[in-house]
Image (cartoon, rainbow, N blue to C red; front, side):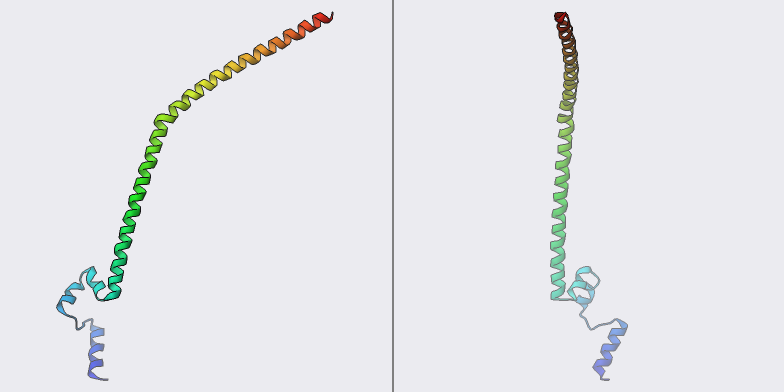
Length: 121
């Protein structure tokens, strides 16, 4: 084994590398970890940035949709429900009026039937 192989094997097993002090200090941070990977690290950072931005945009859209839904629910509760209550009261009045009309028609039918029986005699 050559001395270069021995040094590389020693560095790999002990965890020490021949890095510069700036890179060694940067290894302690998240960015430093990505800097070790060069172009691939930059691509990952850019990808994470755009993913984070897209995530925030989706969160904003979801919050706006929830606000719009809350507004529609509030409008429904404030405007439509009272109108439906009024409609229900009107329908009950119409039902009682139709019941009265049905009773009058039955009475008129009986009266006509009685009149026809009397005319036959």
